[in-house]
Amino acid sequence: MAKTCPSAARAQLQSVFAVLEDVSGELQPPTPDGYIVPAGRATMTQTPSYSDSEELSPSLNIIDQFQDAVPAGTGTIPLYGRLDANYGKPEGDALFVALQGDYNDPTKISATLSATDPLDADAEEITISGIINANDIDENILAGKFPPRGVVQIDDERVQYRSIIYNDDGTATLGGCKRGYGNTVVAAHEDGATVQMLSRIYSQSVCRQTCSIYILNDDKLLLFMSGCAITQDAVRLQRQQGQMFTFDFQGQRMGWCGVGEVGEAPVGAKVKLAKGGADAYTPGGYIRNKTRRDDNAGAGYRIIAVDDDTDTLTLSAAPVGWQTGDALHPWLPKGKTIGTPLESRFANVEIDGIAGKMQDGGLTISCPVTNLEEIGDEYVGEGISTVRSITLERSVNFRAKDGQEFGRGYRGYELPVTVYTGKYPGLTLAHHMLRVKFGTPEIGESDNVVTMTQNGTALGATGEDALFIIQE
Figure 1 (cartoon, rainbow, N blue to C red):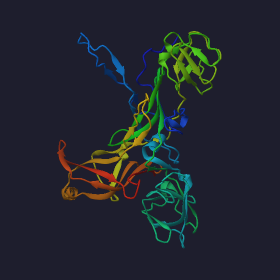
Figure 2: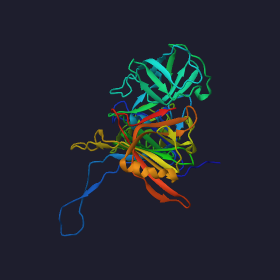
Figure 3: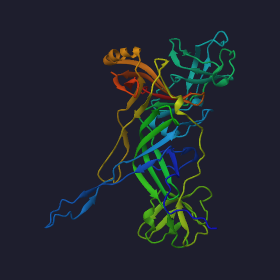
Figure 4: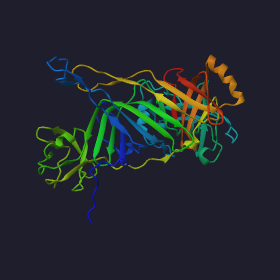
């Protein structure tokens, strides 16, 4: 019995890829490690506007319209946090890098143990020296430093530390240490033992990388966009479902790739389509021959050029055996789900080192971008990052002790804050803010309890250090 697929694209089927660009604005090919499982539909759009003609006529009708230059494209990718417990790349790694600006590869960060006596199991501080951070990043805030918190490995033991103090003698002290982290064995370590960073660290930078983003809807419409800057990450804090991160982006140029039909047997890398078929394609998209089950040995056929007049596509490779009437569908590589999903029930907020109770809330990391718009360019130009806004929103059940928040909030007070998503070793993202300024709270109510909502804003201290995202 013949199987049939609907001609309508099914909303439940979607694949997403995000890849960092080597050159900003130049479309990069999708790669398997850029695969993202969207938690809800990812979207992408770039729609030109039209201006009405100002010409007058004997009629009250508008007699013409003019297409304007194309504005920046926009889109959204919701995803559940998925981490590799062995500190490999998480799902959406490119989005986190593009959001923050810098990624410090932990394999390039190390130090040596400075101790005259072996460390015992009760030690909550560890002194290190000879810090190396070989990440070659312009204006790297962590150049020659460790992150403000994280996980290190000494011999076979893993240690989580929650603070770092740089001493006058060139050493540094790791504080709040949790020995034997991740079910490793606490052991004595000799002076000079290597202290290797394990945590993946996303730190801030004035200059940020852009992404190429691909969204395949069913197998019928591929949308893609180059020059995508991440403009916001909304971190949802609640008690239900998976731990949600919602990334918004703004890009330079969108393209598309739909379904077509071979009009004539190809000659070389040129494929003539049925009449009008070229309108379903733009350069940069990828296709496969669904009829022949040909996806160019797993690489897809990239569209190099589109001739609308002759309905002809020029492909990256010359297909073999394609015939008139073959069905052409958009293509993306097969993605493998990365890591373990985080659960929202483990989210928590630690203020000045103390974990507090809260109903729900969120952390919104807004990094606006303005794209250059210049005469002569049909599409927008490069993006310029503007002032960030990092806001913590939290709602709590009002308790007797909370009355002091009104006086403190009115004056405005600052405390370090860490927002945890996840709980287990290697499966936790710590959003660490050195200074959060809290405002005056507002009172509301639920069905049975008076509630208090209080927001805070993350501030920088010395440079690009308002927020670190650290895998612990």
